[in-house]
Image (cartoon, rainbow over all chains, first blue to last red; front, side, top):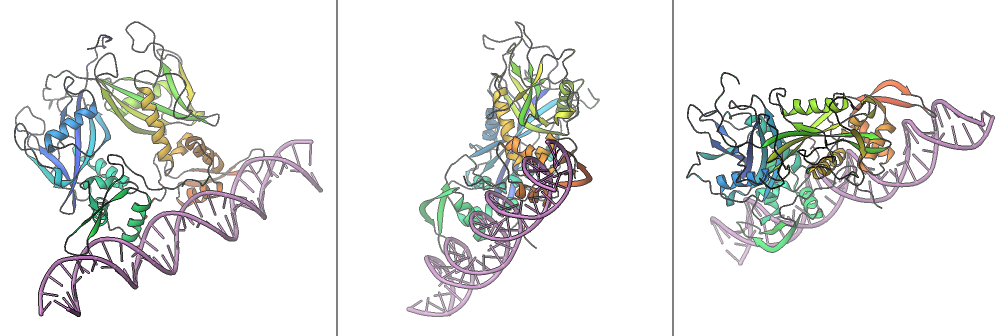
Length: 241
Length: 241
DNA sequence: TTAGTAAGTTGCACTGTAGAACTAATCTGA
DNA sequence: TCAGATTAGTTCTACAGTGCAACTTACTAA
């Protein structure tokens, strides 16, 4: 409490939680991080898979976003190169412990960066492939609905922005970036159109190095504005003036 | 409490509120509905203008969205033809009464439908023109930041969707719709490109009637899918197959 | 009947994409 | 050392959607 504090009215308060939808690209598939909920008679959805998250700690967390970053770091051990708010879900019924509202964030991670934390109070943590806007296991709470919205947001935003680049490490080749788009969008993308789009939008810049694999080497690029999204030109396109 | 209820952990809980950003077009300007906060020593931001909103009532409100609809109706007396979640803001500092999280919705209304409620517990309620992503008065809490995000969302979504149509009554002419876009986007829009866009995207359908004013009458249209958004074709355009 | 005004159409240049066919650089195995 | 396979990257053409300007149409008002 600060010294300017004003007493709050005494209404009953909903439970406040934060959940994070964490995406990565692995085995040429879009995958999402899930945790297994603990067993026990007083636990909601015991043994179900769920999105990582939990209660806001009004002492530890100064804001919803720092709370999301904390939960992300607890499960993956990394800071996400991209974190965005997805929305919030709240109702009397979604949690058997009472009226609850959850604030959902989604993050994109390069697979290489991640070392899943299985120690301590972390229950089982695993990547699950996203197939047809869903994962295989039945999820706890309303997390299946939340996940579907997250996937839809990721897909639609990838149609006109640099978002899928955050599934890759800081340096990548254009064919790798194209594949990230294809994994997210779930369809092939034309090579030449893709290259002109990305290069003319000035999304990336060359590092000067090349990646040598089994065939012709590919030029390496990095994002011009790491952490930010670049948008491709849209309709109602800008006038000349 | 339902009979399947599970006891909730005893953490201290943040305050939970819902705010609504209500837009309309009036006098060829984008305008937003604001309410004046009550005066009093135990009131935060006394006398400041603020977005309409307030605490979630865990007895009256079954979900965040019904709570938003309730607050909308309290201030305007109407059901909004369009309501969408904008996001949530939560931190230890944003409200002097303690750690609070607000869930923000935004709504679009035709001016004609609205009759501002000034009676009862409603304080002063008024439309304020949006100029340069801001309103004139200094707003309470972090509402200036929230409003800026709402305006930005409205603008960017209007670039590629039928969103501005919800600023108009159910029946409208194409020049009226074009003007709604111009008010929201803050720039002129080419007439012929606009018409081909709107008509080929099948956003609207003719009612068969015409609006007679002082000159050549204009054909009346209505939305083909009232309540839903239609999107214009975007980049990475669909393949032929 | 004519002038004025707003609704609606037409034609052309320009931009960005889809698609396919091409060239370039490397590795592998004979 | 050279041929074939493979992946990186380029070029060319057709086409769709837009920006812009000039045009036609339908009404009102004097």
